[in-house]
Amino acid sequence: MDNADREWLERRALNVIGHELRTPASTVRGLAEVLAAGVDPEERPELLEALVRNARRLEALVDDLLTATSVTTALPVGSAELVKLSDQIPAGWSEDGGLELSGTGTVLARPASVDRIVAAVLDNARVYGLRPVTVTVGQDGDRVRTVFESPGPQLPPEDCRLALLAFWRGERAVTTAPGLGLGLTVASVLASHEGGRLWVEARAGGGLFTYLELPAA
Image (tube, rainbow, N blue to C red; front, top):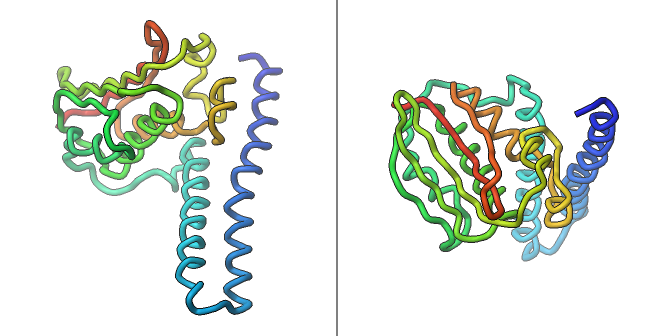
């Protein structure tokens, strides 16, 4: 990526960040003002639920921004634990059906990191790919390799080359769903934080392979 492209991406990133943060922030402020002004007691539970939901959304966006830029205070802390991926992966899938899982493996990592990595990769596949998403887990020496296969349209080479770059979103991603373009960036940073790595490759026939390696237990 040359300097002109990087400058364009930085300008676009600032615009996207402003839009994505402003929406939940404005909602939180509006709900708080309504509650402060006094409302019918029967309406309070619904308003409070919306307030909490948007506050959590805002917090998650800020966490992703800090993690993607490798701000250490946003990275999970504590000791590594045994995490069974065959349990963690289905928990990260938000739909009924559409996920095919085979193999097993236990990694030594912080559970919070694994949870966020799996959620980010599966969410990327859910939003931009087709069903089924196939996940294969297997041990390779002192590593556990997980392969996420997400079928979909043929991707331009730059989409794969820049997929882990913060704020990068290909043309199809921009027209499919809103977002900051941080999901795979966050997953990659967290994988490195746990002594592993994450990378992507184009899938023959369209779609994407996402590879995750973490230390085996």
